[in-house]
Length: 474
Image (tube, rainbow, N blue to C red):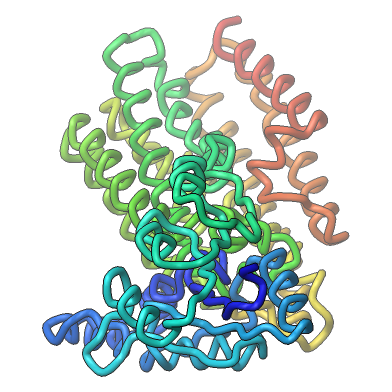
């Protein structure tokens, strides 16, 4: 029986549903980028030195990292029966010690150090020497197969079906098998926030307002801008989630996000973000230098927001409003239309109001005096965000009304301009409803994404579209 043998447990993506080295890199990139650059320089001394430098520079909250809870409970049961349990990992020794201290499960903890990277063959040699009377090994990776060949028993932790088949072919006892769903298409849809692509529909508004919607070249250009923005934004969302792991895990709803929860391995996020961003920039470049510049500016601001600006009160919502407005600007320049300062002015105040509504929802759910995690606000800031948000919304309606009165009507830009007055009424009604929900703390998502699935919002939008069509074509 293998139950009497010591149980050796791997750390990354086995005991934890994440990789501690990538967690530390993401933490440093978001909070201490200068220290990350210094740590990267340690690569010249080898991987163990690099891991040590990263671990020493970061201060990860071990308690906040997602654990494989079913495995942990099983280990506690084995521990209660008097079984030896040892943590042996390729992570730095200091990280191994910190994890062991947190879980209080292990008889010893051994990690990389003294010039030895405790992975692969090095780990196999260590286990042979230390546990020469036999051991059972808990791992997650195809690279663990050669260790399982030496082991007397196997514990599988979140392995793929292919790895499971190969492990069973070794004809060793499998003491436990803790399954982990693979990264399904639905999980990627969630991680890349594909439902937020609805925000990129803003690039088509200049196409409609300029009257170029009947020109095939303009339609193709707008579609290219839509896809390019979608790819860049998706990559930006992944970067934001990597930079915001700790804050998301402490959030009342965001803790379930794919990367924060460990359902999607961090290595996939690190790979997907640059590929998506590069694809988006290449597509934007095909639309001309102006489109590339607009979408490039969108990317730069998004990254600045993810790593720094989102922690600055007021600045964060101004940046979010600017990103929405940039979508309109990208849609304008890529089709070669004239830039409308009426449209951009309205958009700036309108989206500032919606951005404040999103933040206000979070603030009203925070106790008075308590800080909003990862942001520069406290629970006492609700009156400020309420006043600023409603004021911005009213300013947007004033700009829209002035446009109708001073430009659209006198210049006969529309066949029936009187119907345009439905716009400030309908938009004003919708905005007040958004703010009522935000003040009650019941706004489920950011207002734009909320509107796409809300029947009242869809109904108001349909009436607005009919009024605009009537004004244009009657």
